[in-house]
Amino acid sequence: MSATTVRPPRSSTCSSRPASAWAFTVDCRPLAIPAFRRMWAASVICAVGGSFSVVAVPTQLFTVTGSSAAVGAAAGVSFAALVAAAVWSGVLADRMDRRTMLLAAHLGLALTYAALWLQAVLGGRSVPVLLVAVAFQGLTYGTVLTTTGATVPRLVPAGLLPAANSLSSLVRYGGSVLGPMLAGVLVPVVGLGTLYLFDAVALLAVVWAVAMLPPLPPLPPLPLPATGTGTAEGAAGTEGGRGTSAARRTLAGFRYLAADRLLVAVLAVDLAAMVFGMPSALFPELARHVFGGTAGGGAQTGLLYAAYPTGVFMAGLLSGTFTRARRHGALVAVAAVAWGITVVLVGLAPELWIALAALMLGGAVNFVLSTFRTTIVQAHTGDAVRGRVQGALTVVLVGGPQIANVLHGSAGAALQDVTGPLHDAASALSGPRIVICAGGLLTVVTVTAIAWAIPDLRRYIAPAPALTLTRAPALGPMAGPASPVVPADRVSPASASRARAGRG
Figure 1: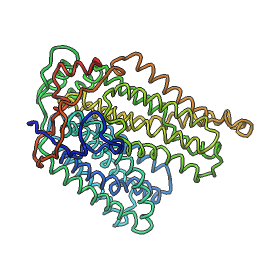
Figure 2: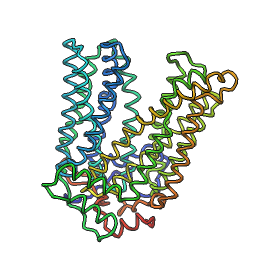
Figure 3: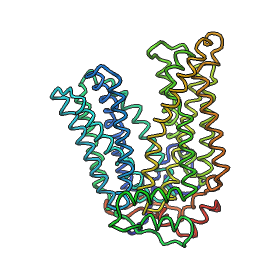
């Protein structure tokens, strides 16, 4: 694909320093690129209108069975399907046109919601049918997540990847808050079946945006000197050619990932922050035994769950304060350590408002962590293996919170038996407090150890943008990737080497 010069509006220059106070708010520079702008606008619709099934599926299952075990089983089925799809679609994304994959995945997801709507309209009460639909939902959604992550670097120049990822996260977290809230209001008015239909219709906006993308066939591996990442990328991208089995190509992608110290460090930091430092499974117990909430839920529980995404959303509204930074590796490590500290503050908080403030601050620093984690993975990975590496990242993103729920829930239950009698005498010794503080401390210690053991992380500096852009874009729907700064997988070997060494 040929490089096409992008000229963003004067209000969104790509200079390294903000032109005004407005530059500290949402960094909208990637929206000057038509292809990304269409996808982002469609994702806004889908983030709210396409998230109703998050409420509808468990509500219908509980209504049909009267058991939370069915809801848990559906979550397990969806998780297993999503992980399988992330790995498999990562292989396919490195072999075929990514626009075609995104179209198929979004259409499949829309058809899944349409099928759920139809069975609800017909009064379906079959749990196996619902579980099959949930499995298809996981398969298609896992493909969407993985392929989208591998596609964005083909649409947005490397210098704008932090801003593009922050915009995507802003929509995702905003939708995860507004969508379920709106669904809860609509259920008694329109019924569960209509919510599924809303999801299916909302996805049509994304299908339109994807159809307007340029073709995104695989790019040949960038020829690099026979050292380090260049050799691994070439081997993973070309091993076996078309005749190579999917399993071998998957293994080649994981070998590439394991051989790259920077990528290993980024994923390890992110996994440590999520597994050790995501105590959401303990919020109901914390609300009841520490902050005086009622059994079975209450305002305290709701506020604890709402505080973190609120902090994430607020950080997204101020993304211009950090998206122009270039020390991406150091920001990932510092943000992960800061997240661990905020988790400790939650565990030690004597009052509910202090815990809520700590969770909001934690959400803000986690937004920085997720923005630069995704940016490093996208920019540092060659296009020939980007799908498979993105698949591994999707597994970490989805699996980390699930593992955290199991670990924190089990540890909290075990300590509850030991410290339960001490609640009245010393609430600081209560089970949830101890587990939350321990998780935060483990996050700080683990991330610090990773950053010390793998200096590639703290030294990594993103390459500087090649040009300063000044005017509005004029790209048609079939234009090539916008790149006054070439895509990350087309950075010269010398530039890539300097960036990895931390010399910029």
